[in-house]
Image: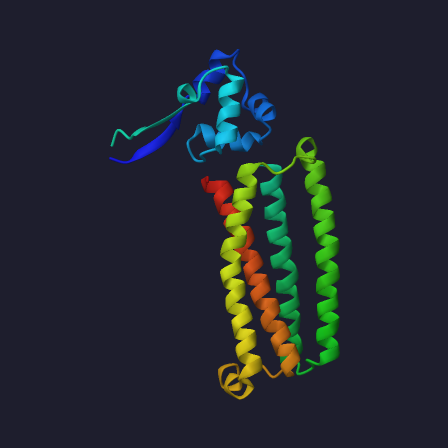
Length: 72
Length: 152
């Protein structure tokens, strides 16, 4: 089975006062479209952006991103 | 649609319109048997001026429509997408460059391969470069649009 990178950004945003994608994007200095692509798993961010996202949610990287096998 | 994507769509549309106009103009002149160096120069100058004017106007219009993101800097995803676009375009441009060299080095052989265009050598090479640069640019922009649409 292939391993893929998944993330909990959507849930973490919801848990942080329903933070909008735009607010997150402005904080980590990327476009909103990039946040959308990351959330959908269409784009894997650089390590720097990944750490910035974890920092925004005040959590560790592995709580935001997971490298796991797909259900297929 | 992001500011960057909108800008790329505009550039692609402008590029295709301007150079389609240029080559259809050449085709008309060729049909009327009045294709001369002067007429080609005139068409070429028109195309270059139109490219500059339309591109500037287009960027102004996109900035007005999407004024919130007009000062937005490229992020890492934009840079990667640009890089992939340039990478794909490069291979095509390389083919064009080799064809131009082939034409210059083997002019006799080339006349058998390109017998349908009766242009002076320099102008034929110029058009070979224009066509391949144009196609490379289309490939670059189309690749970027594809990555913005389908994800990266």
